[in-house]
Length: 117
Figure 1 (tube, helix red, strand yellow):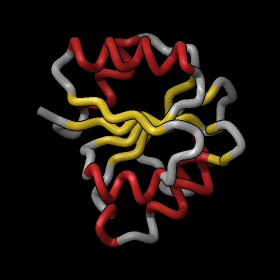
Figure 2 (cartoon, rainbow, N blue to C red):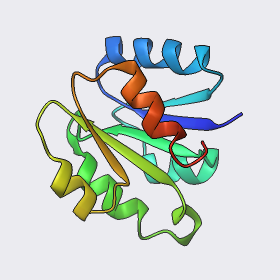
Figure 3 (cartoon, rainbow, N blue to C red):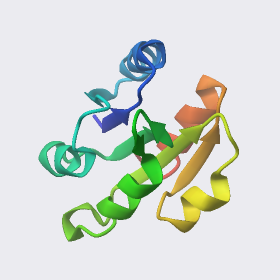
Figure 4 (cartoon, rainbow, N blue to C red):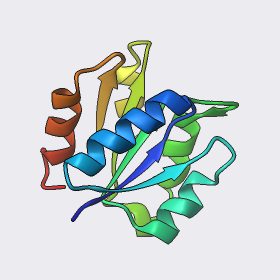
């Protein structure tokens, strides 16, 4: 079973994504807006990090940059999401994929499964 670390500040979205991903057989760990996402990623060793670009007071872009500095997280697949089209910026700073909100569940699942998660 693949593990997904979910970093999202919208509680409704967290609930919906947790339900969807668990129904698809994934183990889901959530990070709240006050979490140290890189440290949590090292601790939990997920296969995929699904993270909002705007994570409360934090910038998902800055978090991705921090994650990419850790050798232990070099192979972590990062999927960023946002209501604004920030695909180019997210990919430039180290994300593997980007989904524009609102997105269809099948689009998310296809991205997660794309490289075997």
